[in-house]
Amino acid sequence: MKIKVCSKCKIEKDIESYCNDKFKKDGKRTKCKECDKKYRENNKNKIKEYYNNHKKERLNYNKKYWQKTKIIQSIQDKEKDKQRIKEWYEENKEKIKEKTKIYRDKNKERIKDYNKEYNKKHRTQQTENVNKKRKNDSLYKFKCNIRDLLRKSLKRQGYKKSTRSFDILCESFDNVWSFLLNNAKLRYTYFKEEDFLENNKYHIDHIIPLVTAKTEEDVIRLCHYTNLQLLTKEENLAKHDKTDWK
Image 1 (spheres, rainbow, N blue to C red):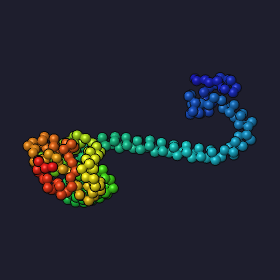
Image 2 (cartoon, rainbow, N blue to C red):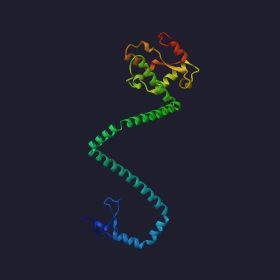
Image 3 (cartoon, one colour):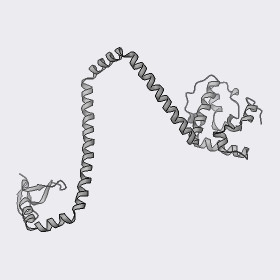
Image 4 (cartoon, helix red, strand yellow):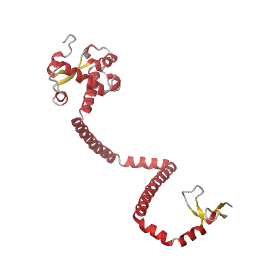
């Protein structure tokens, strides 16, 4: 049997003679129940006055405490539900597979129509989001353009793009963007970013044309960011695949 010395009367008493207190190491108050009772009886007015003077503070504290308790309880309940569902699924795995297969066999056309409609709606929404982002984010638009350029460069030579754009360029999009803009400003004193991104007055050109490539590795090497430059639309069309153009 556990015993504890009361901090008030200094008498050793059974642990059950103390009220619970979760903030104490042993989970019990330091004063025994009898001392607590005597204190409350001798200080009724003082306790009442304290509660009246701190009514708002107590209400706010209790409100926050119960809100926090509810959130914790909600999280715990969700975790219990997840575990219960997981256990149920493991126990009924084969039954679920069998029922799913039967349902799919009976509703092939319905599922096909639903997936077709869902994918169409999803693609439309995705396209709208991309167009909106391209319109408002110049760097994002540049990323899309440069990826498209790399894909078309490989496709034009009969290859598929299986290498990440970053690995082909050997530099981040931000730095490639800055590199092209800085060189364009040196070449054209009247250069404006919006003319490149919005008005399509400038094209991204390969300094050494892709026509010189003989292998897929050559194409990737010629797509290195240092072999790219911005030219006006007219100059790019005039240059075409010429290797001696200046």
